[in-house]
Length: 224
Image (cartoon, rainbow, N blue to C red; front, top):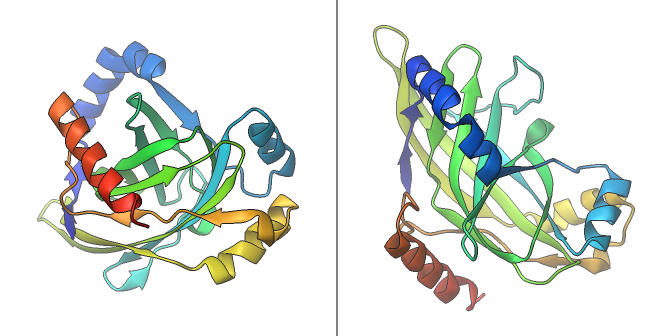
């Protein structure tokens, strides 16, 4: 499924920062990337959260684009929406796209992927991807999200294009890597793969959109 690249213009970014700062602070939390942080993972589980792990693999114009974590690196930051209570979370992704997040049980939509490149600016994509965190104090592998972005530039250097998204199961490789970093055993890990659904709403601003999203994901995820 294609997703268009949307440019966040500098003036718009300024207006958002000036006008919505307090609203965003009140409504959006941040989920740090806990990869390799054994103590933080253990604390999150003890507090009743679950832990999910996986990877985002970004291909741009046929070549892998490495995700970094430095100030001037290319990064992807997912925006998660929990459908049960409409809470929103900005989730961090580590180097090479790997992530480990502490989340409350629930049904989640990756409703946006924030894209930042030093030379291109800020953009976002709507991947139409969801997943479910079933039970508290469990660790779930949710898969690898592959993105293939075909980009082009206009006369003044503006970026545009389309992206295709696909979910891949690399658990055979991911399990031992995670278990080693987290200091746990692979046998304790469970699988709850993301799903890409082209009929998921592209925005979740109305009750009808929330209801449709929940109905679709319930139908798909209940059968997995």
